[in-house]
Amino acid sequence: MADDKQSPVLERTYTISLGPLYYGRRSNRAARAARRLRLIVKRHTKADRVVITNDVNNYLWSRGIEKPPRRIRILVRVFEEGEEEEKEKVAVVFLAK
Image 1 (cartoon, rainbow, N blue to C red):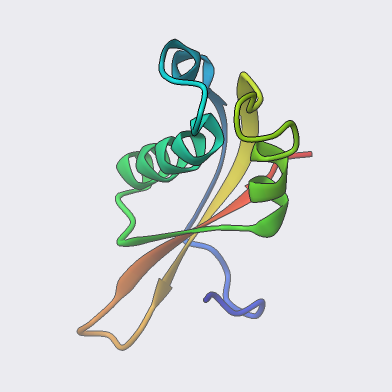
Image 2 (image 1 turned 90 degrees about the vertical axis):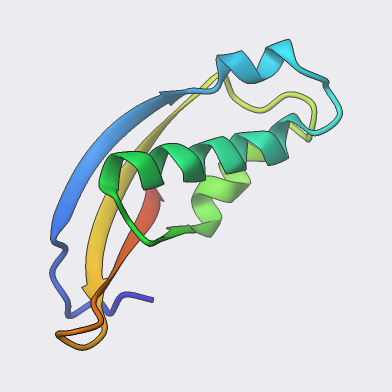
């Protein structure tokens, strides 16, 4: 994962609506919320890999598997890792304050 010494290439705050998840089955909404979050971050940052921190995951699962929060505010930092020829973009998702 990204080192603390490395400065991010991109840093943005997003508010993501998870309300459409409530139209589906109740049984696995929190897991679908995590997948949706990963997909949205990957789409907006064009990252090769998305890392969701424990704080974000705990927030998604805080009310159980059937009732995740309707929206989540996140901070996304994108880092570049690897050698010059083989750079990989890694997006790290934090809970916004």
